[in-house]
Every structure is written in C-alpha cells, then in structure tokens.
Length: 360
Image 1 (cartoon, rainbow, N blue to C red):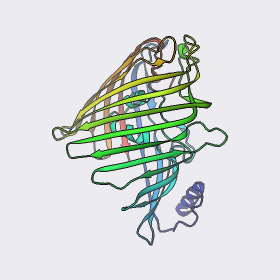
Image 2: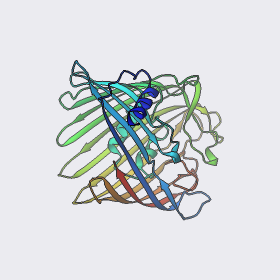
Image 3: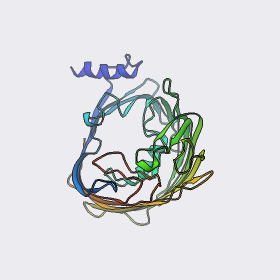
Image 4: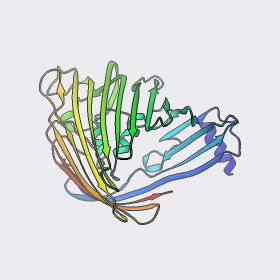
C-alpha cells in the first residue's frame, strides 16, 4: 500500500517511474490553528473566530545516484480547508550536488518568497511579510525552474524562471537573489520581474484583494535589500527595504488616467530567545503609492508584537497582537478573509491571536 501510494505521487510529477523503490521517503508537515479576537476595520465589529493557519502535509524523498549527486522530489499540499488536492503547495523534482548546487523544476516556493521567509519571525496570519508583499510576488509559481548555488564562502545565489502557465502567461518572468552570511550578520538582495501582469485597482474603494492579474503588454518589477544582525547570542534584528513598480491593468476610480504606480515599503523585526520564550516585535511602513498621474495612494503602517513558548521540540504555543493604522484608498492588505484577519482599505484593523503549532 505504501509503495503504491508513493508510486502514484511520483507519477503525478511526471517522468519519475524509474525512481528506485529504495529511495528515502519522509512524511512531514505542520498542524496550526488559532483563536483570534478583533476586527478587520470594515463593517464587522470585534468578534472571536477560529482559523486554520494553513495546515498541510507532504512527502519528500531523495536517492543517491551513482555519480554522487542526489535526485530529490517533494509533494506538499494543504488540507481540505485550503484546497487539499495533491501538490497544491509544492510538486517538484530536482538534482543536487555539493559542488554544483541544486536544480529543481515544477511548483515550488519562489525565490522572492524564500527570502521573505528568512525575515518572517511571526507565526499567525497577521504576519508582517504578507503585508510587505503588496502584491509584488507569487509565493508558489506553478511552472518554474529553480537554482540554488553551493555555499561560496558564505555567499549563496538563488534564481528562478517562471514559464507561461498554460494559456495564461501571468507571472511569466524571473527572479535572482544573493545572501551573504557571517557570524555576526547576514546581507540580502533580490530583483524580480514579471511580464504580462498588472495590478488591478478598479475596486480600490470597495475592498478586495489586489493581486496582479493577466494583462498583455504590462509588467511588474521590484527589488529588495535587507540585513540581519546578531549583536548578542539569541538576539536577531533585521530590516528590509523594497521598491516596486507596477503597471496597472485597471486604474482606481479616483485616478482613472493612471497607468502605473511606484511604491516603497520598509520592514523592521527583532526577536530574543530566553529559555522556552521567544518574544518579538515588528513594524511595516508602506509609503504612499505614487501614480504617474493624479492622486496618490496614502501611506499605512502595521505594528505587531508577540511571543512563542516551546512546549516541546515540535510543539509551539504563541500569542500575537497586530494593529494596522490604515488610510482611505491606500491599497494596504494583510491577508484575505471575511471573518478572519483582513486589512481593509478604509479603516484601522486589530487582532489578537492565540495559537498552537505542531511540526512533524
């Protein structure tokens, strides 16, 4: 049964029928849920609700080849509440070599998203990096190739190329990043560009999720520079600065002649671990969105504090509180949802979350 299940999973990735039955296979995943209290700044007042924060399960494996390199694969999916079909989060196959680095193809976490994860110290859906995103990248492109270099004296290079996704060539583009790690600090940089995609702001005053949409002849690009420092043991202080340029698929009603927008964002985070406790704090500033003509989007801020408590090696309890100081028509968004945390465009949002995480 186990062998048949693994064979079926590998077949879904394509061209894997020849993988040896003796290859190592690992079951892994995360179970996470929280009870939240707050409001989304819109018509819904303060209320309590439960959220499944992306519970997911996966199978991954590797097989050592005769030349010393490894064949690796991964199938990772959300559970039913988040669209639980096989490979809904990741589904890829690749090769790795200590001297040459690693290569994989399929659906996998994007280079931009991987860099954001390095700074994501928070656990809940109020996480600052999802707000910092500002619709500038896609977390899990479905048809891509990825490369990660070996460690070159502390320097690691990454990149991806995202192919057209069937008839829809939205997010067709590339990204390249560099990270230099030292005992006392780490430096980050990345650039990405998407073709045939634009920002849709047509319903800006009515709320909504402003992810990019397919738009022929449009493009979106962004770069990001950041650093983390480790001044004393168990203390991490980090910051990112991002500049994004987005062509508009549809302009907002208050500025119908706009064709593109530029926007800068800043993120600061810090955490300190003492025993089983890891308190942390963070701040995001989205500066005004500058259109090429007419009125601008207004600036907005998000503040967040919280702490983890390690109940065991694999179990974490946490509490976090977040507050968005919003402005009308600012295009500021944390995460989608009706009853859950959802930063609207015309009101302040606040929430406190009590959650549990089980890693396996």
